[in-house]
Image (cartoon, rainbow, N blue to C red; front, side, top):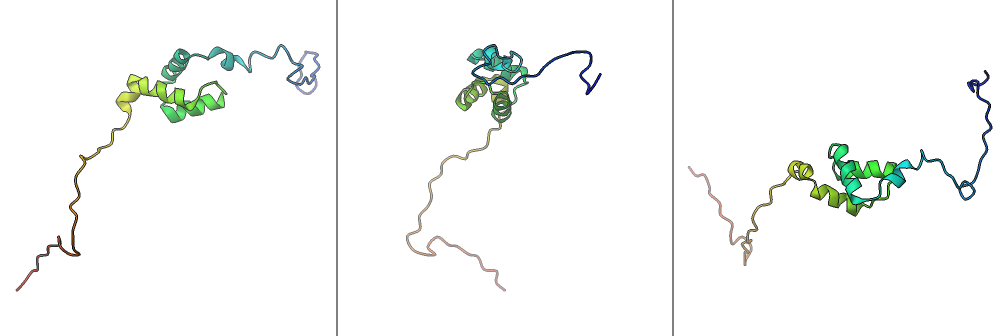
Length: 113
C-alpha cells in the first residue's frame, strides 16, 4: 500500500473532451436531469423557497441551463415567495405646489416679548 492507493491497481490517463465520448455521468448528472420549468419550480420548492438571489447562485454553481428570467418567473409564481416578499410603502402621488416668486410660500412665526 503505497501513497494511499489501497489494494487497487489503476492507471490514470488524460483524454481531451472531444475524445472522451462516454463522459462520466456523475459530473454531468444535474445538467441532464433538470431541463424543464416544472423541474426548476420543484428545485425551488425543495430548497425551501430561497428567493431569486440564492436560487441564481445555486444554479450558476451547478451550471444548470436556466436563465435569470426563468428564475424570476418561478419566484414570482411561488405563493411562499409572494407572501414573504417585502412590500414597501408607496405614498399616493401628490401634486407639488409651485411658488411663482422666491419666498412666496414661506411662513414664519416669530416668538416675541
